[in-house]
Amino acid sequence: MKLAVIAGDGIGPEVIGEALQVLDVVLPGVERTEYNVGAKRYHETGETLPDGMVDELKTHDAILLGAIGDPSVPSGVLERGLLLTMRFALDHHVNLRPSRLFAGVDSPLAGNPDIDFVVVREGTEGPYTGTGGAIRVGTPHEVATEVSTNTRFGVERVVRYAFEKARTRRKHLTLVHKNNVLAFAGSLWKRTVDEIATEYPDVETAYQHIDAATIHMVTDPGRFDVIVTDNLFGDIITDLAAAVSGGIGLAASGNIDATGTNPSMFEPVHGSAPD
Image (cartoon, rainbow, N blue to C red):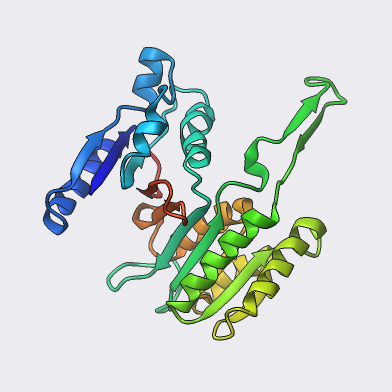
């Protein structure tokens, strides 16, 4: 197995160092290649993602990421120039976020909540594609737009992945969206789930608006098994899911090319904690 290692910034190298020690015990003999990207490289060279690095990453079986981000770099530079660029170049269209409360881990929720669900978030569409613009910037009449892009192809492959995941678990899938307001994208997501559901008669399906889902994630998290949602809603509720199951410092994330064409990337959810 060939593993690309990106330690990154802040506590990233420390976390990765411990993770690799565990890996050496669990799976000895993994061939590792370390890549120096992040704030330090940006300050030294002005690069966020060196030429040819994506092609090199594609020769590996998986990628292990520590953390990216530093206050000395303008906000968004590393996120867009490194993380989002890799996500699109490697077609990481599934962001898989398990949320499980383990014995001995405290939850901010009262009692002994039953928390064991997975969020399948679409990773390459929605409002994170950089589609939009602004005019009359800096004037009282400034106009800014962010366009949410949703394709049948993109939605279907993530929904299908979620159904397959549900089939291996408790066989329940919940679509989370806001189709009473976001009528066009919401309709596409709902119709796609309903159509694909006919191929999975053993999986029960449900729908919740995003606002209702956030309530139930706090008041009744045990009702969820697999949640499938778009990029923006997924970005928000996955952090809530981490919070109720012990904190963002314990949460894990997989950025996955479900086709297996490109290496998937795995990382802790927490930031670089530069302070």
